[in-house]
Amino acid sequence: TMMAFVTTYDPEYERASPGMVLMMDYIQWSFDRGLATVDFLCGGEDFKRRFATQSVTLSSMMGARGLRGHLAALADQASHRSKSWRTWRQPKAEAPDE
Image (cartoon, rainbow, N blue to C red; front, top):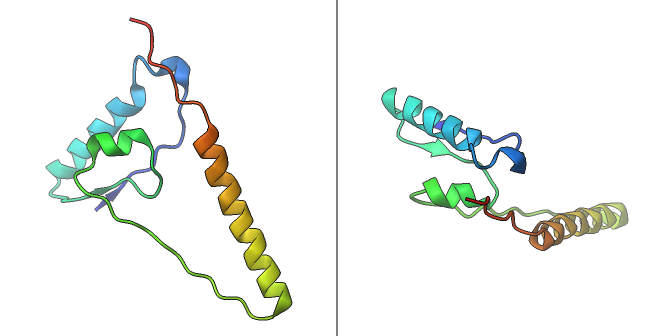
């Protein structure tokens, strides 16, 4: 399994698509070496749907003991919900002009 992680994205260079070129190169590199899977890791970015043939749903559980543990768990849940909400609210990148 090749584990692939996109570290940056700049809308100014979207038209040239250097990230897609790099991704296709390392996918090809992986398959040329007999690897059967490229894992795009977690997240719901559009490029993953473009290349994926399957997906795996991830989940997690947390348990807390005592008041401090419960407060820490609530803070963690609030942080995750806030990040999800901010991601959902972000405007989608517009297609480049032809």
